[in-house]
Length: 325
Image (cartoon, rainbow, N blue to C red; front, side, top):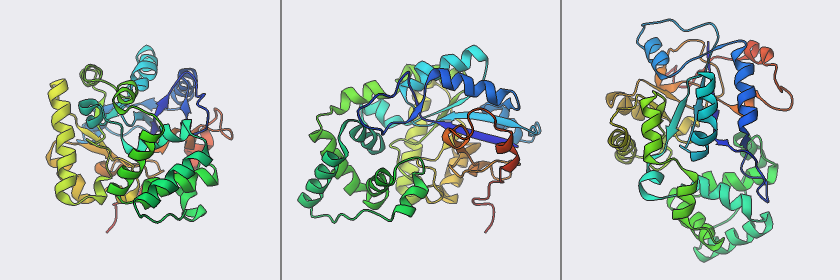
C-alpha cells in the first residue's frame, strides 16, 4: 500500500497576527519523517513510475512525501532535511508565479487573512461585493467544514465563500481588490513566496519535480480548451527552465470536481505517468495512476496522533475516485 502525504507551508515559526497560515516547522518535519520511516519505505517519482510500468511491485507499506504550490520555504527548509536523510519527495510547482511575479488567489486569501483582523476582512469583503453588485451570504457551516476541517467554523465559512462560492473572475476581482487595499505588493510578495527557476531546475535534476498547473486553477472545472492551455503552459515552462520533462501532476485544489478523466487523458498524452488528487485514502494498489489518493499531513499527525501511526495504517481505506463508472 502507498500512502501519499502532502505538505504546503514549512516555516521556522508561524507567528502571523491572525491564525490563517498553518504548516510544520523543519524540526517537526524531520521528526515526522523519522516516525514514518520506522514502519514504511519512502518512494520517489522514478519508483512510482516503475510500479506504474510494471517493472516493480508496490511494497506492503510505502510513503511518498509531496509538496504543493512550489513555495520557496519548501526548498529552503524541507529540501535540506530530505537531502540529509536521503529521502525522496515530489515538489509540485505552479509556473505562473515564477514567470510573472504573480500571487495566486488562494495564497492572497491566506496572506490577507493572516494579517487582517477578521472583522476588518469581513468589512473589506462586504464593501467590495457591494461595489461590484455581488451578493454575499456565508455558506452552510457543515459544508464549509467538510472542506476546511482544521479551521474554525467562522474561518471555514469565509474561506469556502472566497474559494468556492464566487465564480473565478469574481474571485480574482474581489480578492485582488482586498489584497491591494490591505497594502500588499504582488511582485515583492510573489518573489518572497515562490521558488525561482534555478530552484525548480535543481529539483528537476534530482528527480523531484512535478507540475501543479500554470495558474493554480481547478482543471476539472474548466472547459477543455482552458484546462489544456493551463496544463500545457506549465509543462512547457518547466521544460524550458529545467531542460527536462516532468512526469507527474498534482491537480490544483484536488477535490473530486477539480480532477477529471478528460484532463487525465490530456496529461497522459503529454507524458504524465501518475497524478495525485486530495482524496483522503490509501492506494492499496496503483490501479488508477492518474487519480492517486493523498492525505494532508494534518490528517496523519495531529494532537490525537503525535507520533504513533500504527492505528492509522490499519484503518486506511482504498482510493475509489474514478475507479468505477
